[in-house]
Length: 267
Image 1: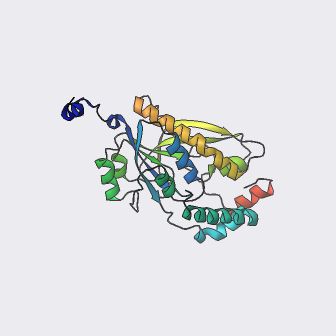
Image 2: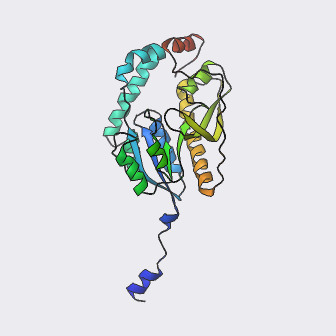
Image 3: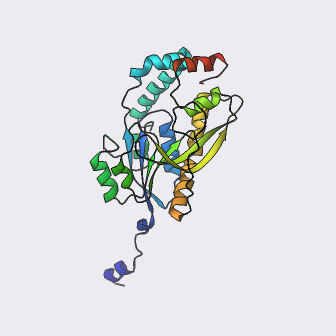
């Protein structure tokens, strides 16, 4: 058989049938890298991740050091500060601890755009024919051009059922039996779109804020993977958001102190 005939008979590249996805994530060394690693490890073969865009926080944690000290208390503040420093050092010695290094460890391109709504990022999504953009947390709201760029949807994974800050904290402080995990479609600005998938993580008797957040990672990743499958198969169910009477603001320092006074634990 000639080489020319062999080339003609070779099967077509099956990657054209893959769902093309990009991930936008807040760059950090706590929680988000674990979620990204679990997601990139467990995604099925028919999902082609075209890139991960890590975004730096607009305000550094050092700028909010006073808030965290009063909110978490001295012991938890010291522990979290130590963890951040330790993981940054580990990242330097080739032990992936950030979103960027986790992406590289999975051979996924790290995108270099400095803003999620950067015109070059939007152009990239269209050129790569991206189907779904997955957000694992970013302070910058998605604009209309970005929302229109993917073929299917922009998704966000949320710990809670509303667009609120620290819902895991409020679930613990309010003595709830479970914490909600939700996959939303992203809407323009600060609004949230329809619910695409939702589940609940039971809160254990000895649950701490840190342990609950860590248990969100595998559960949330599985919820996202199921949603991508439903979108690919055309079976996704979009449900309206139901507002609940629950605090939606970021916890204040006095909320953290009250949580500790009532026996709640951050660690």
